[in-house]
Length: 297
Image (cartoon, rainbow, N blue to C red):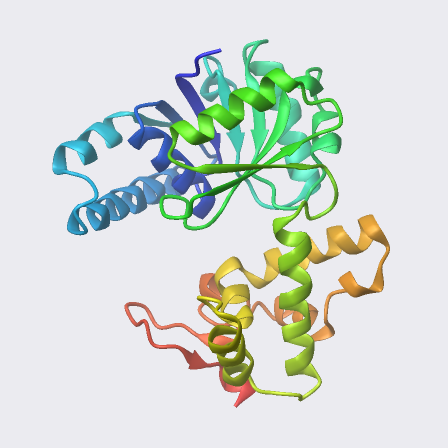
């Protein structure tokens, strides 16, 4: 099935990045979000990111115009998915919210539409069970920032059909991405490997083994990581890290996935990383300098 009409649910960081990539590759995209202000913010962000691509010689001004012309917005989910051939949900990593969204999408989208979720850890099978088309539900986990990162982790639910998987693999390649197929277990592969490392780095700080800068420097210079685990946690969002660890801890019942108490306390205190302006580091608008948060000095 040739896909052309794409609906993205959620206008946050991942949602606007996913919309950007589809629209830049010639797809007609509708971004749906209940908050009009969030939709307006998403269009500004996409415009700024396109300008960044222009400055690097990746695209032209005409490419930017074409991309923006391929995007429309809506605050009504029923209208937004009414002609969609593919719906990509990119809402907050909350199982109850996702189940509610998928139930609504299933009721309003065309019967042959594929329903994908950008979840980074929640069971595709459980999400699919909220619909009457589980064979057409699949995970399409993009990496942040979406316009830059090449990987798309494609997750098959228990009932996902081979045809749907093949369609999403081909589509990912059409977007210039590299698809990798995994099966539906908590954390999939990306976060099943990544989150224990981040959690262990937080435990190392919590236990006083090393400071923030030492932990990140060792992993960057010693292990060749482009970003240290604590900086990466800030970038992902400490609330998101906590949510993923909780999903894996609940799913596997293994203590190695239990979130560090420091992470729990930071999220409770609203120290979520880049999005809140402070996590393991403090973030000043317009500055690329990393400054260790006062609580860790």
